[in-house]
Image (tube, rainbow, N blue to C red; front, top):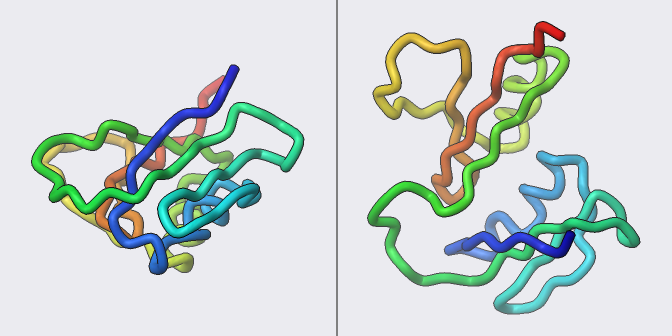
Length: 113
């Protein structure tokens, strides 16, 4: 498996945020690109490219976090700078947050497995 791609608008503000949120490592970064991986020698990774495009529709990449403890994970991500957002999804068990650039992602309820 190779590397996935995502877009970022303000590279300085969130350059390392996604790596911290996922517990991954930044393996490459430049003025227009940041690549993160679970470990430097492990793939797949995610490659974020600089984009000055204004968001017009749903994100092309949407992350769902499934932690062991939803409340603790939401608190951790809020501590890293995420914010709660409302996307009119009604009554569901996931918590919708946005990263530093406003890209939404979900923190799902604990698995019942």
